[in-house]
Length: 88
Image (cartoon, rainbow, N blue to C red; front, side):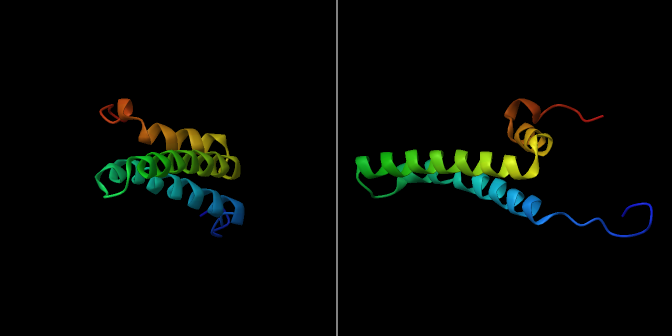
């Protein structure tokens, strides 16, 4: 809530951008699962490559919509180097 007691609403572009970031994160599951499927090696390679490209496109599209500060914060949460750091 802001000072006047009104709720601050997020813009439509912000919500779409956050959706893109979440879809990007979920798409990274496909390259992990694909090697264990009964597909041919060529198909697996295509699916993995396509998923990685799609995930990156979705991430950067979402980053453009939400702003670089939010995208940088989101990306730092996903960096394993930052998982053990103490906050504060």
